[in-house]
Amino acid sequence: GAGVSQSPSNKVTEKGKDVELRCDPISGHTALYWYRQSLGQGLEFLIYFQGNSAPDKSGLPSDRFSAERTGGSVSTLTIQRTQQEDSAVYLCASSAMGSQYFGPGTRLTVL
Amino acid sequence: GQQVMQIPQYQHVQEGEDFTTYCNSSTTLSNIQWYKQRPGGHPVFLIQLVKSGEVKKQKRLTFQFGEAKKNSSLHITATQTTDVGTYFCAGRPNDYKLSFGAGTTVTVRA
Image (cartoon, rainbow over all chains, first blue to last red):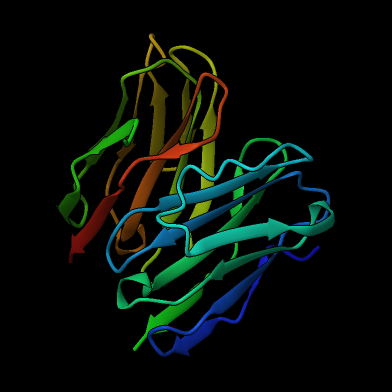
């Protein structure tokens, strides 16, 4: 079975542009998390989806960040009007029985 | 704010020596998980502890969950170069979402 996949693996964009990052979780996993990891830093929680419940958006750093999870499966993280400080690796993880399975991440570079 | 604290932030170890990294929470945790992230990689699940005072071993790694379920430790014996990476603990306060510590980054001197 496939693990968590993310696309694109790398994204370079210009300041002010919008970007969309995609996460395909493991089939059947009801929980999905987005994290951000800057170089050499820990995991910064962004947003949490659990089943059909309203998502926990408490970690989103600003209103430029939003995420959707369609049909309880694929998730898209959107960053509008990107800033240089948004440069980081964005990690997605899905979970079924507690432990989280991480995708390889999307490395975002904002020039 | 961060609910799970991890110390030390960095651990420089001579190959063959032992070391321990610690994870502390201000609130009781329903469980604690440990992950390892190799340089350039993504976090990979190592283990989950659920019971008070639980101890689990994976080869040279020993994981412990405190009696009060507020702290945990990871002890590595006879460190090898393959142990290089960042070790994260993650706790679930009050059965809510997982909260990650900042991680302990381990480097090994051959």
